[in-house]
Length: 195
Image 1 (tube, one colour):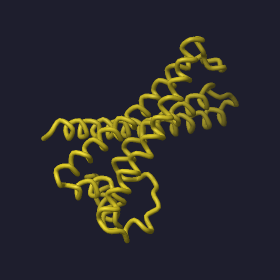
Image 2 (cartoon, rainbow, N blue to C red):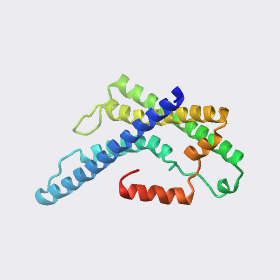
Image 3 (cartoon, rainbow, N blue to C red):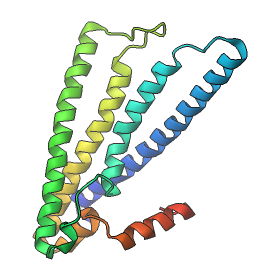
């Protein structure tokens, strides 16, 4: 397996691990909010800081899910015309879709770096009683964006290698808009816990 393919598979594995962690964090966030509501109903007091932690977990969970959503072909694309096009235009559209997502990822990376650098320089902390250093949630959020960008770069490199090797069909299979049959098969695999 060429180095580019191994790199792409490694980043896919990392993104799968990150989305699992994001899912567990979302579950923990829900349980924490439920416990806070029950505690408030029983005692009239809340734990304090639950809303702040929930906001951090929610933002981190979203950024940690971006790469896995890309690999699962879950980012929204208008596919009315796509499925009617011949093969070559579909490959071109898949490459353009990855490039446009990479532009978004680059913008998010640059913006998150500016925010993180400012928080680090100023020693910024949250305005709550918890006084959490803002670089912690911001760095975790930025990590998700970086993995998203790395996923796009490795997928683009792998696609270029596939096209140059005469395997353009692999590009459409990996990154094209899923057919209804593929979506149904994926749903069945998910219901069995084998996806």
